[in-house]
Image (cartoon, rainbow, N blue to C red; front, side):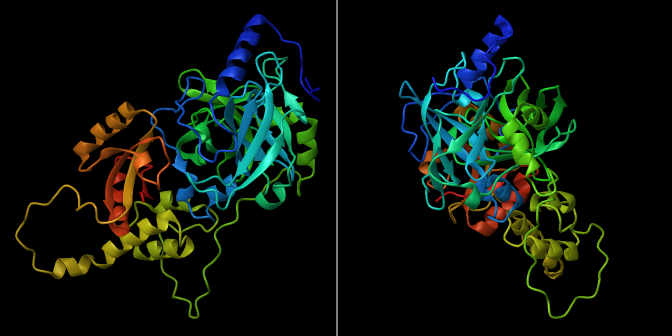
Amino acid sequence: MPRLRRWVRRISGAAIATTAATMLHGQAQEFEGSIFNLDPPALQSTDLEQVIGSDETTPLNQFHETDYYRRLGKPIGRLAVEFLNGKSAYCTASLISDDLILTNAHCLLDSTGTNVVRAGLLWMGYLTAGEAEGGAQFIVDMRNPVEVGFPGADGAPDYAILKVQSGTPGKDWGTVKLASRAPADRSSLVVVHHPLGFPMVVSAGGKCRSNRASDDDVYHVCDTQPGSSGAPVYSLGDSQVVALHYRKAGTDENAAVRADRLLASSAVLRGIVAGYDGADVIPAPETLPDPEPEVVEPAPQPDPTPVNPGIPAAEAWALIKDDYNEELLIAYIDRYEGSFYADIARSRLYDLQNKEEDVAVVTPQPQPQPTTPQINTGPWFVVMGSYTNRANAQDRRNRLVGQNLGAYVVNSNEYPGMTPNLWVVVEGPYDRSTAVSRLSLARASVSDAFVKRGY
């Protein structure tokens, strides 16, 4: 076995060794298939990582390429590994320098600390099933790790630093920035990852937050699955990685190694952080580019809830989503043009601007109205949940049908625009404007509902 440059070989007790064996071998879920295949085989979730309640992840391709979450996800890739037994597994990894990546040790070590992986492929920019265009692949040296922490051994955290052999992807895809702190309890988090090896998703907003912390770990309630191991955990809003996700903890939490714990264990990471401009202080993410300046400035208008240009589109929408001020909606659309939420704002603005005309028209006699508009008018669906298990999808659908929503369950394999091998709760298909309009109603019941083109 190649000499590992950093890991502790001494196991501190049989109980720890048993726990380590479960974590190491179980999370790197094996499958039959080549690491060079774009799309993964259908995998079922295990009990070693977990979705907390309903799955509230969002495909990253639902966001504009300049969106905050897309920028966070750019230096993150899918790491496919091939074991010595010929089987394969997926993890998530992030670029920390031009040619180094950070992931979990259990992606390459077995329960005894032996390196059981012979090859690895880092796939950057994998956002849509069946679409390799825009992505890039890099061979990773799995046999000679730069640095490894063996979980369970004298408290060493579960991490591995690996070298990219076939290029310097950090120059094109950027790098994550590590913080020297752990997140505060109950603070908002973002996890960008490749669950089950599928296209990249983001767990953020809503319930995705830290619950508590120990000396080594942050316990969070952000949704993950096998394949999410090694995903960086960001502090929402400041672009710093505050932890490295690695396992399930109990029945209602997941666990991530604290960033300050990683830095205490890793000379390589300390050297990288020391090289940051301004040490490890990372500025707030830059906002979307300003629109072209107006020739004539409009007269200032009172704005009860100003749109803050320094926060992402999703967070700005959360602040104003219950406001019906036309000037505010126009300001939001101008600032976040091209984003998913700008379409919702535009639909609401249209309703407001046509409200007076509607009042002036003679009201016709009441007529029975359908629960939902006519379907099959376009390729757009309102997505209200996606599951690997059909029974879970049907349960979500049953809870929605009594809320004026025409929800039903489809197999995503029948729609090329959807992530494959999932059972999806949808309404539609509609034309885009109808789908966006229906989205407002759906979000009253499912806060993370979104619009997706099916074909």
